[in-house]
Image (tube, rainbow, N blue to C red; front, side):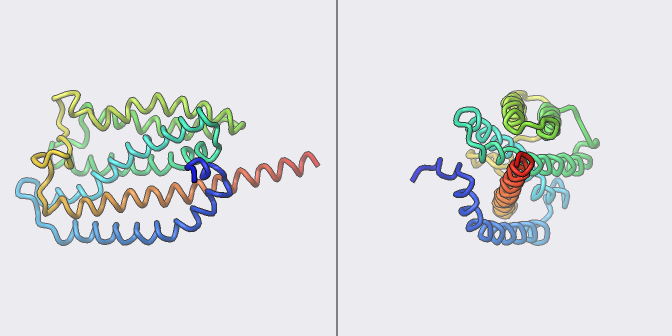
Length: 242
């Protein structure tokens, strides 16, 4: 069985219909367990106090904001190379979800930064590149809406996605590229010394799993909606011709 079978809308709809109930259930379990555990059953940090608990929203949202754009990039490349419509529709479906995660990360980052840095915003390399990524999300969605021909819209948004990927990369690695700025390094790392304390680390992993599953669930739902919308438009076009 080839992975490209799922580029067939009928195959995708059947598989996603089977997967969605599981995705929804696992999403609810991970989010409830992770957030309740993190906010109510972890101690205050010795430096940051209870403010540190924003980590259970901020870190997963920021990670998924960037990874959502990476998923859009992969789907856009598949569209450019193989012209599979499901991949283009999946990229389109992921954009509002990624934008929502981006806005959550910006708001929670400001709430976290104000008591820690004494300011709601700083033109830090990572924060600036993240803000630019947010504008790319808005631009991507606006471009889809502005172009009537779906294939032309998919072509142009795919190119925009390639350009925006530079800022997704900068958002992820800005702290490593520049040793300046207020933003801390990674909360999770393969280097054990850079991770947060285990008492925060384990519930944070559960929250991250919940956000990943939430992203998958929302993209599956929105892609299914996009496919149905495309089918409806095709039927209406045939009726006009007839």
